[in-house]
Image 1 (cartoon, one colour):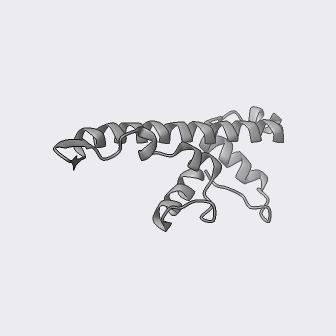
Image 2 (image 1 turned 90 degrees about the vertical axis):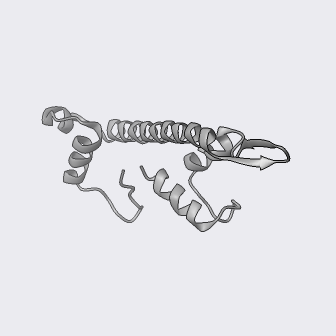
Length: 118
């Protein structure tokens, strides 16, 4: 979903398009009666749904990765990612990414920034 900056205000047409695109509401009477608060809450809920979908996709990818990707530790083969949270950091996505507060490489930061905008 598109993020707005404090410098850019959404036009009525952009809000209507967001409602149709992201909320799948096609009733123009309902759209025109919607308050700013309702729009904000519904869009925030949609953003959280997208984050949940991303988490589920990462969980599936993690399970596939665990099944396929192992590393040798002594005589044993162990998973490359021992826990799901070693593979997917939900808090990092929820709070956004600040390279000043995290010790991660730039490619991870860019990926998380993109994910947090969905």
